[in-house]
Length: 289
Image 1 (cartoon, one colour):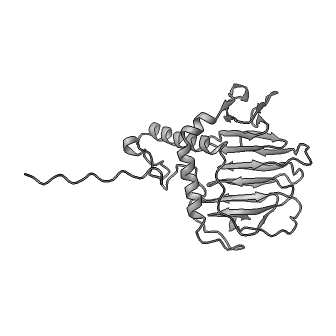
Image 2 (cartoon, one colour):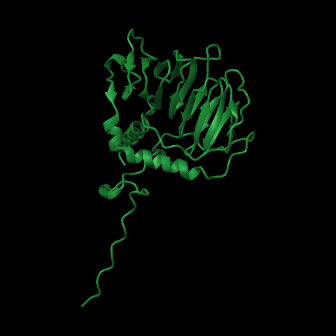
Image 3 (cartoon, helix red, strand yellow):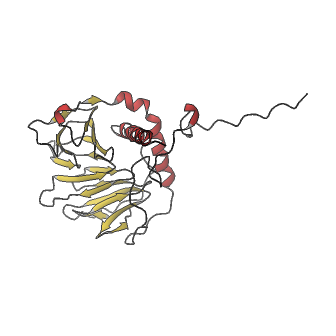
């Protein structure tokens, strides 16, 4: 496979994953066990929903998390290819971490408004207002700084160049470039998204609507949700024990063991799903006359 075709396929898979996941509310996952109601330590977050492989780094070693565990400031959260988690803050705000993600929780303990640093993958954040007043928080990526006061929005690292996609479901967020000094930022309203590129000023980036593309690619979102549901019944992790190691760590959507994305299916029918089963085999030829 040529390098150009490989790059094109990889970008297509990542773009599909980004547009479908961003701004789309997945159906609720199956009910999880009751979470302890004990008060959270200052600045911590509690894991309230869990599917698949979710861990936190202790030193340089990943340790498996269980429902009810807490994550402290400066800790790094990792999710595997089947990993999905929901964390809750003391003020009732929550954030979801999707498969193949790497997130630092409150990397700046001196300011708890600096909520997440997303290095890889996809997060969705639900910020609660405090008594009807704005609740200021910030989310960082290698290329963007996202400021919010109380809203629902998604952030995704789209490719190896750290392109950031920000999509707003409710409320308003402000986005500025993290690497290129600019006097102006972009304001996103509900139903809008923007891409922030590493070497392109934010002033040249366009704010777009995401509804059309999300509708066309909704099947990819259904496939992702199917993976989460299937892994919900897998064996639970054991808190306090090291996570399985090996490989090069989390991979971007579309990666395979060899680093090449899978070839597109022939016939244009898409990948088999419960709503799109594979075509039956051709009937045998009639017996000869």
